[in-house]
Image 1: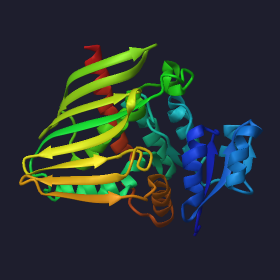
Image 2: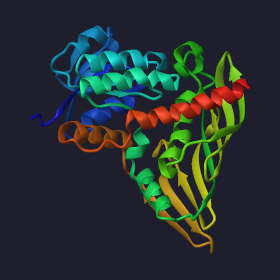
Image 3: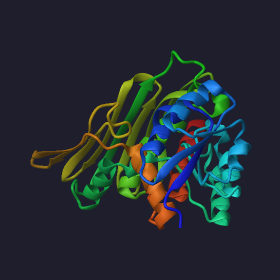
Image 4: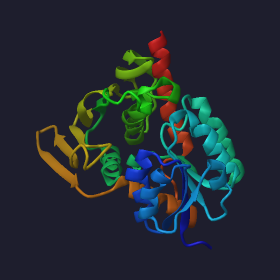
Length: 324
């Protein structure tokens, strides 16, 4: 039985170079073995990171490489489904950047290919591997806030100066909701275990066909939800779970160490406050190591495609509410 996983990356994306490539390189029981790019300049930082890296000049060549066990797909959003299916059909395990698909139905061919291949396939929803979120879910389910009344969520950054960024282009599946709405929607589902019953309001501002700001309110079975995402505001991240017996606030919940220290601030109904800090955990490395444990040991995977499909179903409801 293999004792490690050899990874290949489809494309030399900036995010792969700065985050997931290093995470694969640092994670236990894994090795960055191959990269698909036709640009020697883009390949160079990866080769410096991982000596002996095989560089293929096409995605097809990487998928045909027998030395690659798993493929990471950081391509533009509209290409995710096609290349995830191709990788699974080539017998590779697959980790695909979020959003995996542009509509919930887009998950179905990937799920079918996963089931036919017997390989692990997942959206790269790294936050569920971070101890901040694992602890938050445990606290909530232990009754730390009592009966939940509202969830308030916010995630913003400002990339208006980068017009060529794929997030600012409709043809590549850009937009704030596809890029970061998956976090404020999916994390709410992850902690509470509930699904939205209805989108009550959807205020969305678009530029060149791309959503750059939105305020969404929704009704869940036992609480009210309000969430803002934007690509035109000062950087901010926050999740608040407000119940009858307490308030749980998560700081830097999606990009710890970039947006500040990851903390859980818990205030009881009698105003007693406690703080738990998570100063050093890297959720990208933890995600890759959890992937290895699932592939090599058969460990449970905390973020199956069916979970990610549920988040996309909420996004689809948002688009429907916007359309009226």
